[in-house]
Amino acid sequence: MKRIEEPVEVEDRKGWPMVIRRGKKKYRVRKLIDLWVVQGRWWLDEEKRVYFRVLTDKGVMDVYQNLENKKWVMAKLGD
Image (cartoon, rainbow, N blue to C red; front, side, top):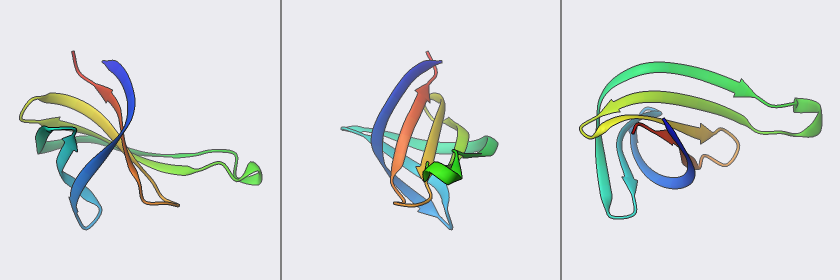
């Protein structure tokens, strides 16, 4: 998978990504493959993220949401 680390727009349903938009490209989520939480060093106020590995209509990708500011980021995209 290729590392992207780029902000994206996400349509979610109850916190679960359903549609991901990156520029003019639109990815429809077909299946949730995995889910995990990463907590940085809380004593240094590092962010807490929820990662989703999803299968979309165009392939596999990892997206995460920063739980503090609610912004979404595409972390990785399948080659």
